[in-house]
Structure formats: C-alpha cells, structure tokens
Image (cartoon, rainbow, N blue to C red; front, side):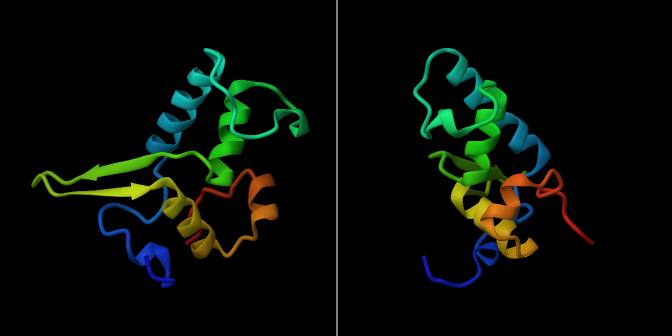
Length: 111
C-alpha cells in the first residue's frame, strides 16, 4: 500500500465506517469480551470496564484485526481493513489521535 491518502483507495461505499458497520463491530467485540475473550489493551487504564466502552475504545484505536467486506448489487466487492477506515476518518477530519479518542462527534462527517 502506498503512502497516498488511504481514503482514495476505498472504492466502494463511503471512506469512513457507516453507523451500521460501527454498531456491528462494537456489538460483536463487546459480546466476545463479555464471553471471556482477552482484551487487546490494558483495561486497567480505562475509566469504565463496560464491554461496550472497551470495544468502542479499541475500535477508535484501530487495533481490532477486522476486515469489512462491502458488496455492490452487481456482486463486485472490496475487502477493507478496519485500520484503513479509521485512518481515513482521521485524514478526512484532521484529528490527532489523542483528540479523536475523547470526542463524541469524532465519527460525524462535517459538511
């Protein structure tokens, strides 16, 4: 992958996570955590130990090893690593990581 803007490499769908993709990822990871899966971060540093909040935090960090498959009605598809979508959101919004993790509106596109 070149060092060009990542959002230009995302050909199908918006260059950010949709609210449906975000909800699916957070819900699936929260369920895994509540069933005893090992977290990928040190949860002792977090203010809450709620599985949903842990999953949200991990999603914002972009450390979940997940690939999103976006499919068109023609059958054409693109597999997009979650890291690409998180990095593209940061490129589009120009948020530094520290600021992005603490903002409630980080994932709302500005017009």
